[in-house]
Image 1 (cartoon, rainbow, N blue to C red):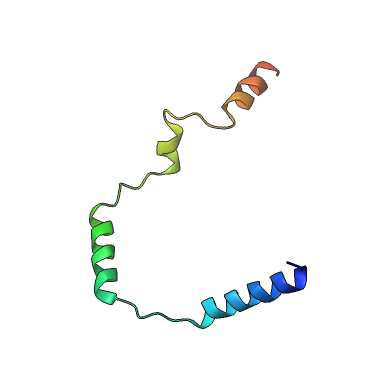
Image 2 (cartoon, rainbow, N blue to C red):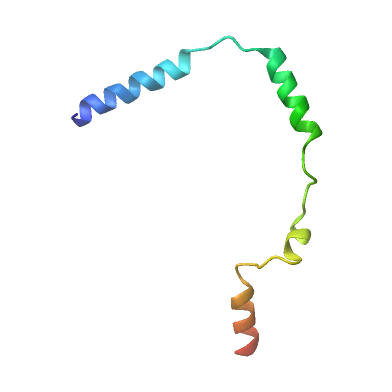
Length: 68
């Protein structure tokens, strides 16, 4: 398929996605949102993440401290 045909197909698909509005089952959406809010994991802060997990810059920090 040439570039013109491919672009025309992409444009057609994009237009269909933009203007197609399926019926939304709001009751199912509400159930899904309720279920996810009850099983939501605890939020972690950046300070929590730095304890016990390797940081991408740990090796560099060690190298920099030894080369002063």
